[in-house]
Image (cartoon, rainbow, N blue to C red; front, side, top):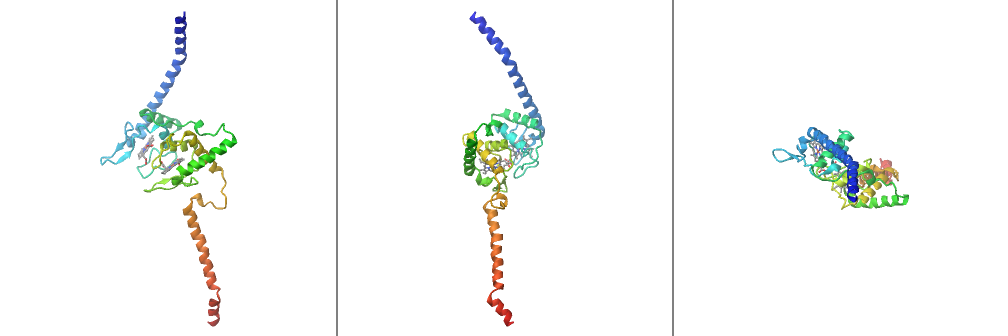
Length: 267
Ligand code: HEC
Ligand code: HEC
């Protein structure tokens, strides 16, 4: 009796769950296949037929290997329009994207199928939803501290960006979507370090994103922000306007001293 019930149970359980699973692996396989087609047309020229990387005859790299970079790297690079790179160059700039969201997901599925790598973060990973106002406030403060220690060296203390060695630059972080901030930390594009979840935990990543979001909302205090570019712009401003005013004043004094007026009298 037990045996019959057991068999019946496993049988019906299988019937209930198996088709659903089969279906999802089917769509996954279809995504990978569609992604492979797109990849062969748009990316293989630089990244190799199987994403293994491509080199010129003298051994210069045309495109790096994408084995193990994960879906997150593809979603970031293609979603921000950096890839497909228009021509080999110093740095792939952000530009309007060339693929639809669906095609981007297919490309990501294909690259993720090459080897395990970081996946695309979910909105629940970086939204502050469900936290109280105080917790959100605390998250922003923590995020600011993490940003200060890990990111300001390249991105400037206001996230305005800055120059990098060898002609590169760290872009401004103003207006960058939370998902891409998360993915940039996770995958470390180009000259940027990558911050794995062991290095900056998912919660800390969320806090950094909250901090950057708060910068977008904060008003500019004290008149001109000078582009928020930090010491260089501010120093230049002091030189041009400050020293300029002093020079002007010195000339004015020189023209109004007793000596210069005496000269006029004697002449
Ligand atoms: C003109 C050549 C070229 C084309 C076309 C191109 N890439 Fe790239 N790709 C590069 C180069 C070069 C880099 C390395 C950029 C760097 O690090 O400075 C790169 C980097 C990447 C990275 C980041 C790898 C990492 O380590 O994080 C991903 C992901 C990527 N490409 C995906 C794609 C996809 C997907 C396509 C097709 C839609 C594509 N690329 C088309 C040249 C190209
Ligand atoms: C070593 C210097 C360096 C550090 C440290 C660094 N970055 Fe970057 N970051 C860069 C560079 C360079 C790029 C441009 C990469 C590219 O164009 O593909 C970049 C790109 C980005 C982007 C993409 C912006 C866009 O326009 O799409 C984001 C977001 C980002 N960084 C966030 C961060 C955060 C958050 C931290 C700290 C946890 C950080 N970065 C630390 C150098 C750095």
